[in-house]
Length: 311
Picture 1 (spheres, rainbow, N blue to C red):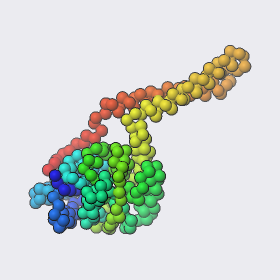
Picture 2: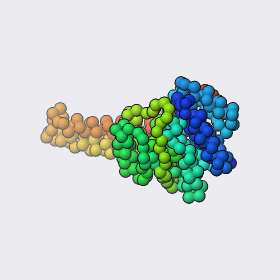
Picture 3: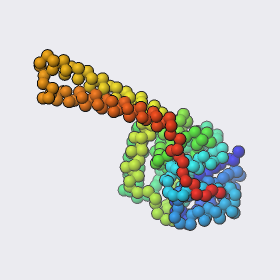
Picture 4: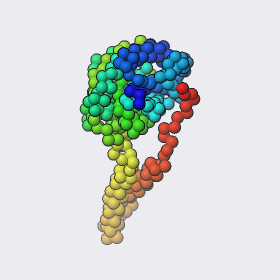
């Protein structure tokens, strides 16, 4: 088995790829690792794929997967995980802000210390404080509180995984921020953290805007719901729907009894309309849970992407 698989999702990074490849080769050779580098081109519009082809021609350890269009980082990681064959799988960004020098220690923590997943922590960052640092700290604090996983930097692209982890989890939408949460949900609870070097971007521009923090919180709500009820949505919607229907039905019976006793006029009573509303809400929520169960049992195309080329 290959010692290390390095998965590199990228979008418009043609300038940085040769430098990253040279750096990775130097680290791998100096440590005597057998390795592969899987570069997933997420629909780049520059010459990134041409660079990947050149790297593959020069060194077969470099493999490339090219999407026909831009699907996002989660899709690129999920596809890279499926293709990885190494004992330890390391992910890093292609912009040279992640240091390949961290890989040997990350691998040691997986192989010797027995961690399932080790996440990098960019303790000292070179990003704009207003644009990234302050929102990231608040985002990470919220995620720690809600998930119970005590990591400082959930969104760090530099992570190491035991092979079993990447073969057992599914990353979709924009859930790459919450891979530690997904891993814990899948039963991989030994999650560690390592302080890693964060470098200034040398080429190109960041691909993420401020909207990622809005999307991040929506994704967090989604992943917390999925972790509890993703396979059994009826347990959530059905329970609330049944309670709502029961309360509405009991209230409706009371209102009708009072009406028959001549103590209440239905058309002038707000309680009649509220009871009907609860009955309708309960019915709709119950049906939502039922439809959710049908979708969960029949959905098998969530992670099908249009791959244009593969090396």
